[in-house]
Image (cartoon, rainbow, N blue to C red):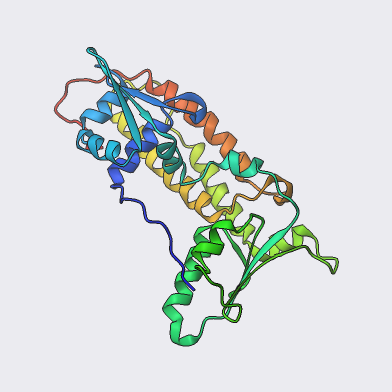
Length: 278
């Protein structure tokens, strides 16, 4: 039995900030672009500490560039957009169909393989599985990848068992969800994110001090969003708890980041020496 998580090339914190800036530089967070124009907010941020990251981002296929004699147009790739969102597209995850069947991963790893057991749990948690017990994990999604990643070429049913099931003793899907995932904590994290959204600096970006405040807010907003979305299994809408805050936070994020993008359009870079370390 093996368990492995695909590793992506490491991305530096400043590069994360740049991807986030690119993400909200266009309305609706679809395929945002960054054009290197003289007085744009994006080019100001780009010139002040991020230019060395561009080649690395292109090599990692997180951005793509279209050059012309007059300027360069950078655009997030699909992979880059997913990375900036935290690895998954919330709308796509919520809107996926569910066939009403639960998939279970049951395992019994000996104490002598404690490190391996911990890696297995880490993999399942990373993939959004919920746990009913430490060795009984559940997901609404098919297990095609897990059959290969977890079991390898041959499955030992005494140590690992993958099942597809439906409840048969009156248990509701809502009870399965409540037992497998901590939505009280998830909602708390989304509530924190909604609070941060409401703290966006307002007004025109009249000078660099105001621009710095917007950049600091952008970093805080991204951290709050990632804390929430990384804890969230992003279940199909059909089985989301009735008091779930994730979709409200997402709608608020689209709206507020759209406003921030329009606010960034009011920026005019000055030529002072006190440039920010973005």
